[in-house]
Length: 215
Image 1 (cartoon, rainbow, N blue to C red):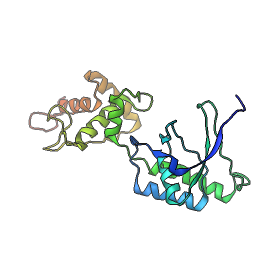
Image 2 (tube, one colour):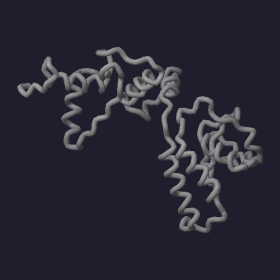
Image 3 (cartoon, rainbow, N blue to C red):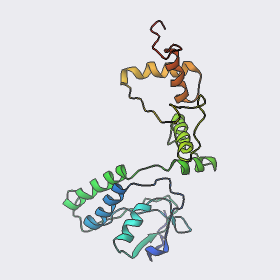
């Protein structure tokens, strides 16, 4: 690795948030990030593209702006070197502020996630490969959620529909049952897991909608 690393001081106002951020965030999550900046300060870098837009760290950028911070330290990298932010005011990882920051960092990330399903669909349509991050049935559910949020409700009989409103139904399963359910889904021959579950349920109902125990 070369020692010729470009480090410069810039202004937060030089950067712009990602206009296509797939995480809408939550009010509670942003509150935690704001509290973290105010109580224990900043300790994680954010990521900027060459055009100064932020693909990762938008909520931290906003928290820094809200806290009245103006200056940043920018490190240029091609992604082949790990950038480490060393907090010299924390003697060890056991420092009380370091311990508190660790919780802020993990908990805010957990609470501040709310997917923008329409943006995910747009990214998929533009060729962004998310297959390493989502299973196929999860992407199917995201596509259906995007249709519901846009007002384009699926046709009854074509996708999940209850009454005159389409809904997303989550089923809780016990671990010992997963192999049986998976085998049943595969047996339907359907690639959409939601539609497969509907077909399985219909197989155990008679025409009146009652359980057919003879099956």
